[in-house]
Image (cartoon, rainbow, N blue to C red; front, top):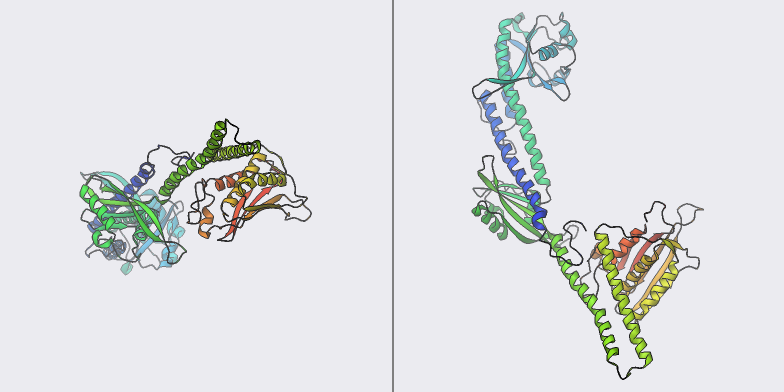
Amino acid sequence: MPQNSPSPFGSNEPDPLPTVYEDRKQYIQQLERTNIDLEQRIQSAEAHLHAADSPSPPSVHPLGLPSSGEFENTLRRLVDKIAKILQAEKCVFMLHDAGAATLYATHPAMGFDRDELALLERRVAEEGVSNEVFRTNSSLITYDAALDPRAAAEGLTRLRIHNAVSVPLVVEKRDEDNRVLERTTVGVLHVFNKKYGGIFVEEDVRLLEQLARQGAAVIASAQMYREVVQEKQELLHTIDSLYAGLIMVGINGRLLQMNPSARAILGINSTTPLIDMPYARAISDSRIRKIISAALSTGNAEVAEEVAFNLPDAGVEEQFRERIYQVQCATVRDDDGAPAGIVAIFNDITEIRGVERMKTAFISTVSHELRTPLTSIKGFISTLLADNDNYYDEPTRREFYGIIDSECDRLHRLIKDLLDISRIEQGRAMQMNWAEVNVAQTTEKVLAAQRAYARDHELTMNFPADFPVITADPDKMEQILTNLVNNAIKYSPQGGTVCVTGRVIPSDTDGEEPNSIELNISDEGMGIPREHLPKIWDRFYRVDNRDNREIGGTGIGLALVKALTEGHGGTAAVESELGVSTTFLLVFPIRRAESGEN
């Protein structure tokens, strides 16, 4: 039996919800802690940026973070500054892409349009000025690009470049005592074409190396910022895609997060701005406000309650369906262990609670189903044992024996069904005893046995004379037909005709023998509502309406029919018109596949 699934016989197993949702709750809390950590890293990146050069206040990012355009503005100011100090016509940063093993020109740059920047891209392994500076981590002066083979290899003259000074961009990682722990070359900084016909000299190299350190710091901060923002975006997408609803409230009582699932559960329009709004104003449901208030006030204590919501039924206008959610709240802490707020997680437990209700109803129904034949058996045996004066004649006694025999058969079928469905739930394949089965004769036998219970029904069969013998399990084929015919009788309490029809399904290829048959079991009963049709094959499921509440049944018969039919390699389907009729359609292969298991 799958873990956490209810036993058909009932059990004293503990409530599965704590174990089912504990991992999910911890995962979501980890997401929120990661979210807080990313916010801190973004603020650190912003601080690095302004330390490098940021005279103007940062622009606003849609997430409430500094805009990445601020980094571009800082680089633009730095490019202008470098060009002026070195009296250069052109200036560009070449950055290293480790994944592609290339050096590429980044925007902003001076003296180049976007197409020209694209022409500067180089593979690290190639020859060229950029490549040599990056690989050797040494500065380089190009006095005459037309005569320098490295400049020719890089094609600098086609970009109207005459001379250049190039230095590596080195990022240094330092400790608290300002000692260098690590140096990483992230690219190359070029200035081209000394103004007024001049040439670059060693003094220009020293100036550019100093300016390159400032540029490398800005670029490193920009890269860190982009990585952190991308990581945060991915985290937000993860939170938004959670099936569980999620609300995060800060210590100050203001909303920090509410994903689309939570909005849908609470009936909040997806376009309504809520972030930084007091939760008591943003959330109208008093039950949820009370839960959040309790979680905020209890500190470390966790809060978990079940709340029912009526949500719009997808695809059905003006109709609602009740969903039950377990609302779990827990404190979220930052890296220092200080409370940062609380997170409320809405886990949909509707199906779990439904299964629990079905299990309870199933146990009650099975008890009733077992008690009914036992009561009849006990009553007739007691009557016969008490008949010391031979009050009942022989025909009457034989009638009593026949009833006792029928009730014993009924008990046997019920217990067999219970054992079979239990084996199926445990994932154990049922043993199939393959043999040649005359389905028409089996149907006739089943109808003859059921006529004792169907005094108000006409049980008929319709099979062609040449209906083929199939390879199947004789007992299980009889079990399938018995369940469906008995079901048809029960759910047509006013009587009518129950008919079993057999037909051969022609082969798709001309000239080939047919390879499957179809059995239709139809009645003239109350029918099945359309919305229940997809669920009738589920174990323990019974259509609940006022017309059939008095009809007995365990809710496992159709689940067993489907499992047994599929065990033969067949399929089961149903067609029904409410208040008119229901027809079950079963398809079986005539011959068992060679690869079939015994």
